[in-house]
Length: 100
Image (cartoon, rainbow, N blue to C red; front, side, top):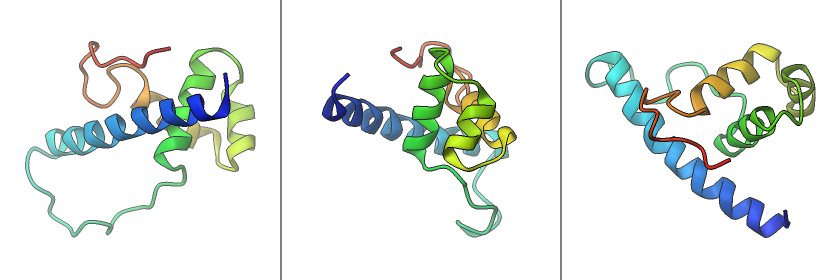
């Protein structure tokens, strides 16, 4: 897959993920946030890296251990990212699937 096509696909998926992430957190909290935005722990992976790690993992191109080494994070960080990004992960809606 050419680099420009990959970048465009990741950009589209990242935008959709960001929107779903905000909606999912709102639903999980049961309302508006209590603390100020940015007061919690910082994400160690960018949204584009989360999407890329998930696509690589779901296509069985790498294990979570190798992806963790590649991105310079812990295996649990990759596991959490895959669970959040994979189809229905953040929203619980299986219709919102990654186009693999």
